[in-house]
Image 1: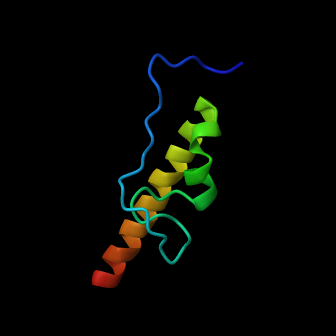
Image 2: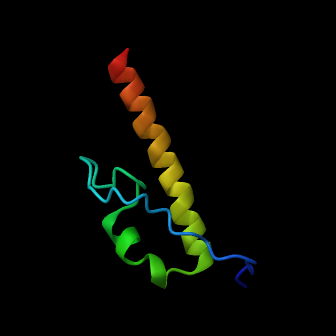
Length: 69
């Protein structure tokens, strides 16, 4: 059974829409398929994608920090 949400899950797009070297958008950290299929995803899938994006962002920030040091 799918969990009900009182509010729509917002699209995480930041309007940058450029693909980085790992194949993720450098703004929202979604893959191409995740960006283009966002409207067709169920809420649980959107939440999962957002969790993946947060993990990707943390890895990218960590890598950038390591390269800076």
